[in-house]
Image (cartoon, rainbow, N blue to C red; front, side):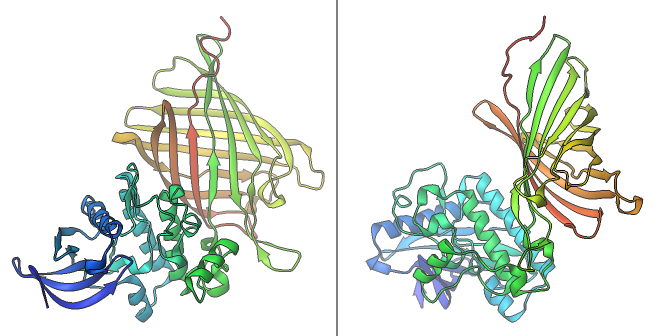
Length: 459
């Protein structure tokens, strides 16, 4: 069947806004994927605008993980665009015939996440991440397609102001499910990535009811079943792996020669597994203990970053399993050399407990943070991630926690406030038994607050 410059060979898919054909472009004699809006001459103006926005959003992105757009046009009252034809097929159909290993699934979603991050950097959301919108080529590499629900983040759109719930219910974020399009953000796409990973690991979407209404109700009113319940082979640490870390830096000039650097560290943990009163192995998510650092640092030390002072731990944890229940104090030292291209150094902190929950063990512990980072243009940095811990109260053969990891960070500005945001992955080479997370994902937010006290405090 002919469609202008295209010969339609076969229908290969249907989406929320159109039908996709494998087609031959006559003028260039090449095979393409041709998407035509599904409602034909009955399409409303809103549908046509949404279709055009899809094409514009995808065509503006140039990334190896995004299916490129060749041509956008209209014919006989129908909108269309042609894309590169990816031979392998949709992810959901591929894994139906050839299931993936857990490692393959995690690595694939990580690659798609990098592609989504690229789109976010260019101000574009996908808003419908699902297995059917991820195409695998003949080498098994993923390509993201169908920005049918994408919009330019910085542009107010009459299309996205509607209360219509856009997205695919089983993979839809809660804000989409309730039609709150104003709340849709990059986190919506991150939710979709998590839902895809859940599907690959368990063989089931996070939520699936008999109807769209039932699926959305499940999504809003219930939690998905733990992945290990559906697939016992899943590594316990893949079920929930995160540590959110907020640590603002607040400098004060004490004298013309000495600065005081105050840094509280507030952490949200996912605990290691423990046995509940019902006998089930569970985890809890809660705030950890509050760490407070006070460093005295010379105001003029050239390329050297030097500091010494007290460090405290306050027993503010929201759960028995995310804190130590002890008031602690000790010394801290930072020694580092920094240039425009890199920083290298070490940052040890030692604590001893002096009060707190008498039923909890006393603490005598050290935290050593190696500092090794490379700086790049645009505020980016890459470096070693992981703190070496030692519990001096524990037996020698069960004392050390030694991780290896890599972190990526970027300094961004919110108004005039510089904030370093970093994401790191860590693997524990050795750690105390009997339980613990081998893998850990850490998100760290470090705002550098303006001086609360202007000028020099003591002349």
